[in-house]
Length: 246
Length: 246
Image: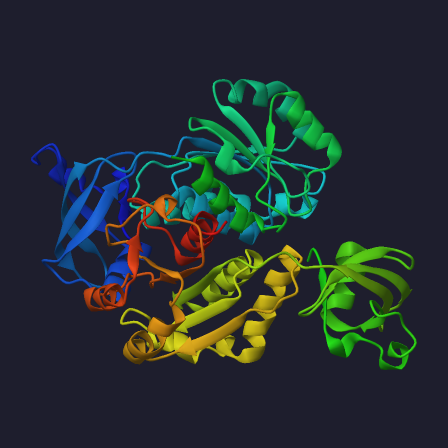
C-alpha cells in the first residue's frame, strides 16, 4: 500500500462546510486502520500518502489514532498518474490468477477490462465467489494503492464469445490498434507495434481455438507473439502491457 | 504444464542398454501421472511434450496408463529454448511472492538467482519452509514446464548484504551490464539499455535504503526506472526481464 485510497464516505461530513476546497478531515476504520497501525506504524503527526477515489492524490496528517479509528487532515493537490492507453480483454483465468492479473494490470494503469468466455475457459471459473463486484473491487483497490493511483478501472463480464466479438468488439476497437496475444500463433513482435491507443486480447492458459483466433482476425485483430517460451497469463500481461504502452 | 519434465530417475533402467541413443522408456507416478490423467486426459497412444532435465525436449508416446503409473517411449530430439542472458539478484520477497516470481522468471529463461538480504527484507521471510531446497525446486520445475525448458536454474541465498556486495558481486558482474531497479530512484529507462549480458538487482517492496543503493552504485550498478507507478516485485520482474533481454 503505497497510497491509502479514500472514498467519499471516509470524509467527515460535519467538517466539509468549513474546510478549504482541497482539505478534508478523514476518518478510517478496518483494513486501512490496521495497515497504518501495524505495517506503517504511524503515530499522531505523521504524514501519509493518500488519494481520493477518482480525484487527486496528496498527504494526510494523522490527527488522532487509537484502536477504533484513525483521523487525518488531508490535502489533495496532485493529479494521479496518467492512465495506460490500452484496454485489456482477458479470457477469464482461474480466480486466483484473475486476482493477481487485475492487481498487476491496474497497477500498470489499465482502466478497462473485459473478461470473456472462450472454449478453453473452465466453466467452473464463472461460478467463483471471487467474481462478485465486491471481491473484484478489492483487487482493483490493491492495484490502485500499489501505484498511487485513484481512478477505479471498469470491469465488464462477457460470457458469450460470439455475440461479444460480433456485436460489441468491433465498436470497442474503433480508433485503437487491435492486438491478440496467444502462444500458438506466429505474430509480430510487440516491439514492432506503433504507439497509440490499443485493445489487447489475451487468451486462456490453453490458448484460443482456431475458430476464435480467426474470428478475432476477421474483425481486424493482429496477432503478436513474444517468442517460443509460453508464459502464464499473470506473466504475459505485465510483459505485454509494458511493451505496448508508452 | 506445457511440457512434462523428466529426470534421470524416471528412465526405466532395464530398457536403457537396448534403446537407441535418443529414445527412452519412462515411467511416471505422482503429480505428473495425475496431471496427464486429469488435466491432459491422455490415453494409450497419445503423444505428450516432454523434456529431460538438462537435456533435449521431444515427444513421449503413452504405452501404458493406469492408476499406478504411466509409461511412455520418449524421443528427445530438440534443443530447449536458449536461456535469458541475465542473472537476477532479488531482495528476498514474501514467500508467496518469491514462489510466483521464481516461476515467472524461470519461465522467461533466467538461470541464475541470488536471493539477498536488505534492511527492508522482513527477518521472518528467511525462516519460511518455502525456502527449503525441495520447495524452491518445485517452483523452478513449474517455471520450466511452463516454458518447455529443461535447464534447471541455480538459486543462491546470500544473507549478508555487505559481504555479498563487497566480496562477491563485483566478480559476478564482470563482463555484464549491472543494473539496479527500485522505485525511489531516478534512473534511465530500461529501453535505453544496450543489448548484452546483464545482472539485474531488484529491491524489496519498501525499496532499498540509501546506503544500499549507494553501495551498489559504488561497484558500478546503474539505476533504471520504469516511471512513476510503483509495481509489485512479481510485476516488475517480468516487465524488466522482457525489456532487458533480447
